[in-house]
Length: 159
Image (cartoon, rainbow, N blue to C red):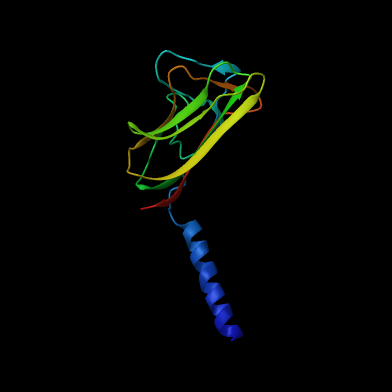
């Protein structure tokens, strides 16, 4: 019994070890807004460009355009956090895949209060698909050196 269990365990370890040694692409990014104060509200929808890099393995996220471009077909996970500091308007951030609105984050801070909104999603992306966060008309976010507003994503597995 011990030999069988030990053999199965060794085979499992070999598979895990082989997985990490293969040429499986590594894709992961995490950025803060880099904003000091309010961003918005604007009269037109605006892509939020997250500029403060924490990690950008694979360089699939552009801190110039604010857009993640899928380097290969696969399942990816994305998370967005936004913050409002004693805001006088709604805080919001919409996650888009290409032109499709995937989810909306929004909250209205009561007078004198701070509010967070966050959401995450797994998406099947084709190579070249674009994912980004938009600030919708009339909405705003607030950030500072504490990095309240973040955009994160990573490849779960290729398809």
